[in-house]
Image (cartoon, rainbow, N blue to C red; front, top):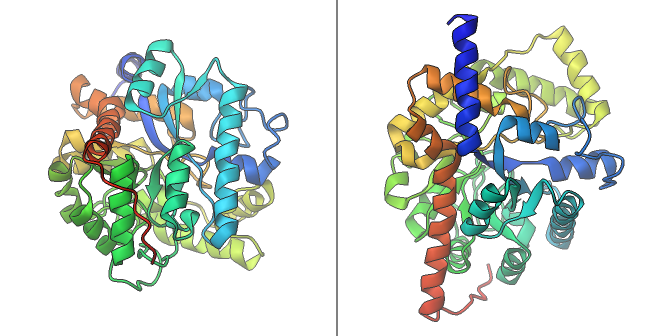
Length: 396
């Protein structure tokens, strides 16, 4: 493609995003603010340019065409019990403070109508998703409390298997969901909280789909058939999304999308651990180690085309009504070229335009599929309320 044609595609992408902005399923900015600044918002102010420290700031969100963001209120899964709950509450509080500090740019969103209203106001709808069932400490009362505080999805596991659900990246203990795990899914349906199946084992995905009466999401997972990593969605699960109504939101994390990056990242992570760092650490000292490792061992580079390969496959298998975007910015040390930070979404849309995606299909990918799923979950909860379905107090 000539530079002129590429420029035209990028301009077309920006025009499309102005009308149908990105609803991104997963951004770990709150955890980065915790790790890098202990929630000192004056010291790490996203109203200023944070290039070099963060993937996210307000100007780059605007440049990227982001209209709604699920902020992850993630806490590491080596936090357990009440420590995990209290850390999650701190994350929820941090998102609230972030919204309050920037009312001209961000607005709290709890419903699909709120998301649509934010678009009309020209503000970025800010939702929350909790990442990992360890955050509720086996308590459905805690689950409901998080919902009342504004959390609109729960990822059933993070990297570790928990008491009631197997993780994709840990040893299985349950063969999927336990009976209590199924009760968690049913209670999420009852209150209108989205069931997020990123990070979970294939068996957990299938059990959740067997149980859920509301659409599920994958907030940041790509296609297993394109990159054989357990964090990605296998085709048989993608094939079930139309019947469920759910959405799989492709992630940008290189080790999940580029086969050559899988082994490289495993070695880079082991290098961090050998120097006393957690493998998910993205603080300045950890990143300095990563850069030194990268200099000695050149990193395989993913691109916007790599992500587009996943979306092409996901569209073919699940259908265009069941795909979305979940970048995982500020939750990964490395990002694809052209998708370096939250300003990069137009480059992905331009790539898809080049591949022949229609404006109507792209509007579903970026905006309407995610809003529909949120609205459908609300509808299931409304039906449960009308039927008088009581809260569950089940225990593991």
